[in-house]
Length: 163
Image 1 (cartoon, one colour):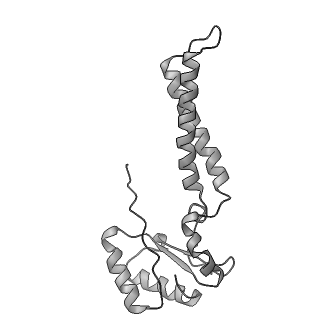
Image 2 (cartoon, one colour; image 1 turned 30 degrees about the vertical axis):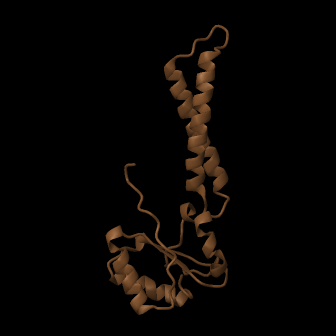
Image 3 (spheres, helix red, strand yellow; image 1 turned 180 degrees about the horizontal axis):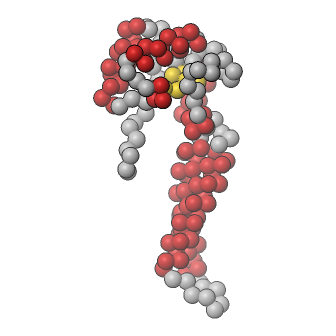
């Protein structure tokens, strides 16, 4: 958390000098206070759309699988349901669940950032930096030495490219 926009601007410059690309930085401030040349958080970071879509895929897949199995065990008169149809219904359920749940979650603020919302409303600025795990300590040390007024909110676990 940065105390104000001026500190955020200084931090942006320092991180650029530390060879962190601007595309790996995001700032979150009160609506309308962040200058246009500073990278703002996007819809995926502001809302719970990712979490909602993940949850919808799981629930939709399970419901689709159950519907496919039910149709196999109790087929409609004159129709036969094959095993491939079970998988297709499960896939369709997962896709529909992910889409529907993601659309609903797009209206919900990101629950992981809720802890920072009161401080953002007071005029502070949240900085999100995406760096490799091996550089986290280096960047935190650099920031702590130059700006002792800044508070760290923690790190997210690394996301695997291929789970």
